[in-house]
Image (cartoon, rainbow, N blue to C red; front, side):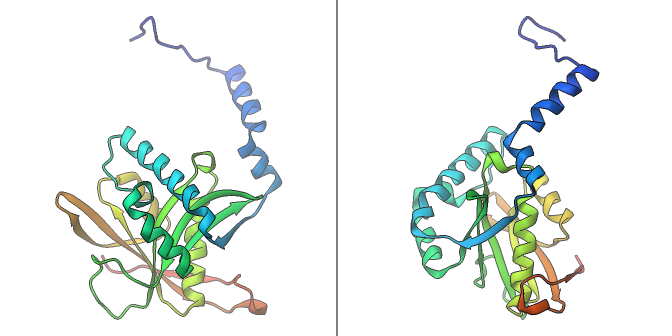
Length: 220
């Protein structure tokens, strides 16, 4: 139903042409057109506030959509853990053309809710992506980089946990070949899904990190 405040959007070829022109002039389109590669570096102490700011923006975005997902980087009580990960070299920044697009944690220490087993894995978490970088494939880049790093270190899997109520995010990880291997109550009334991506390294060419990895599905 239309009301006095309803905005009627233009449709048809003229609207599509305007949208196309607007996209072509955006910084996101320019980045794609120039094919600026993304790169990963270890975070440094000066990144702490940037990471926290992206975390707060992500937390606000989730809350605006009615999701209870907890973003650790958004909260002051997590600052000590961020500093520790910077010092240990397990917090990473994703950059493109000198612009920081995202942060993530990749470490060998499992979270408390992963049951002990014999799988050698790296644990991926703490991912926050700048709103301006959404839709640029940053998440896929982080997943691939993490899989390659796990294989390079001789690990056989990348693992992560995801808030069970965030169905879009669960589907996203599954679309990147993660397999849901369990569900746990992380806090009272707050469940998480445990995801695993199994990787097998191929030949590393010329000592570079550019190698193929094979994804193996696990039994649910």
